[in-house]
Image 1 (cartoon, helix red, strand yellow):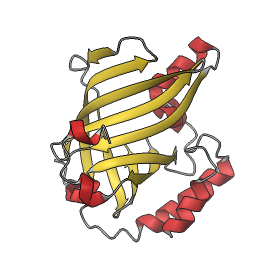
Image 2 (cartoon, helix red, strand yellow):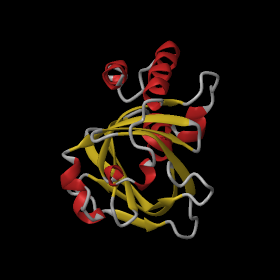
Image 3 (cartoon, helix red, strand yellow):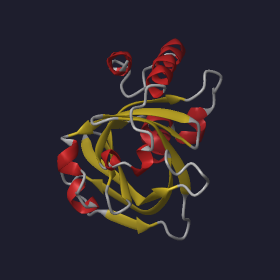
Image 4 (tube, rainbow, N blue to C red):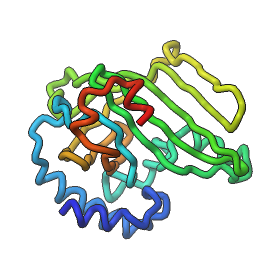
Length: 210
């Protein structure tokens, strides 16, 4: 089933090029994989720690036609918002999530603007939810934002004033594959970068550099 999901998402450019029919087919395969989740409480399992590459993001329901407006789609709300300002010259290159054992998380989006490489990093904290779903769900609070574009100095801003929050539910987890659902209605598929045993003990700073 995991191989079926990998094959289904491989040509979608992280979901960006997936048609409605492909989204529905991928969702069926994802739901079958979720039903076979081998880890009972993934939000409390050390396998959650590490660097995860985004393979796919799409709607978490067949009838959901507004998830892109709520989530910003594959590229996220910040890069998606840049597109109309730059005549469609902003191109996403890859998205990585780093979850560290100290309860910190980093969402790293690499992109290009007119041929110049850039990196957007939104960092925060994660903790098992206190709503009775702490075994599968973590609450996320974003605390910092940084933007690096070419040789320009890095721009860093704290987000404590706004304190954006949300939750992520891990619905499938094994040594190298993870499926989750977000509070805005998306479903996502990620693959681990590197080996789980090497990443389980990494603090956030070290994990983000690997």
